[in-house]
Length: 427
Ligand SMILES: Cc1ncc(COP(=O)(O)O)c(C=O)c1O
Image (cartoon, rainbow, N blue to C red; front, side, top):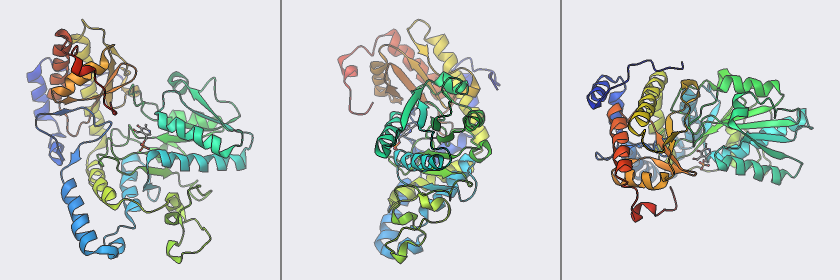
């Protein structure tokens, strides 16, 4: 699949027709967005699910207020990480009993990488190198660097370029590599990596792989178990619409789940937590990747987003996402041709996630001017304007209107105002 399978809309009326015919159009009603907003940042923080406020209210008023401590059992609180894990597994092709929802992506990476290195140290102690993308989300790199330092056992984190990953590690896969940690879709450029072929290249080199699915879970079809991957982590607050800071997930292949424990061996990962034994005994299976008490309100609200993602046909989501990004790219190239705008997202469908990123030397100020008009994307250094394409609540007309607004902002230098140069703590 490398070329558009639809005829591109020629004008706004064409976009309106495509929106009216869109088989996913009713999913927009599952979300609440301000009517004067085009939201292109669902790759960073997904939109609010329709029932979120009511569900949080129900947990607070009924389950906490009335049920009190009984709700750990009667409202299923204690099982929420596993209950939600099953729902995530349905979205990422994980298989039953393979996933729990808990902690943050960064913390889950620490757990997964520690367990993977321990397994490798038992089988191949000479392997002391961890490879990860130079352009990986920085927290993943920092966590690996922190873990290597903590272990103080000669581990070294080596950064590799995206092209080296796509080529199957011809220059960097040596017999000292223990582990490769890869983000499935580059957070800045939107480059998508092929999970099955990359996983086999890593396994052929004798290393293990952890996939970070933050930018792909809920955005495209994933067959984790089928790809032969070892472990995966990811968040629920982007394309899974779990809410700000909603808990992350961790998936471990069935074959590896019981081989080792992870180092954050808290009581929630114990085989019998309420025996209150002074000795740690890991639970069988994926539950051993839990650590401690979780935020129940966050988990309960995140479940709504997972239920929506389980209802949709992920192939249809992917098809519309590619149609939206094709349109975005075509319009950027035709309507913004007079400006120094460069596309950084790959054109090939097989290498494109669910976002379009472009650069412009004044990227920050341009994004600020767009946001002032209620068109919300975001900005990442250096010079990158990111536009997340979330097929469940975005349409073709939204893409058309966004590029028209960009054209106006560029043609009329609307970005060139002092107010658009001021940066907040979060861009
Ligand atoms: C690819 C990727 N990995 C890891 C993280 C870090 O996630 P958290 O802050 O939940 O630990 C993010 C956050 O956006 C991300 O995009």
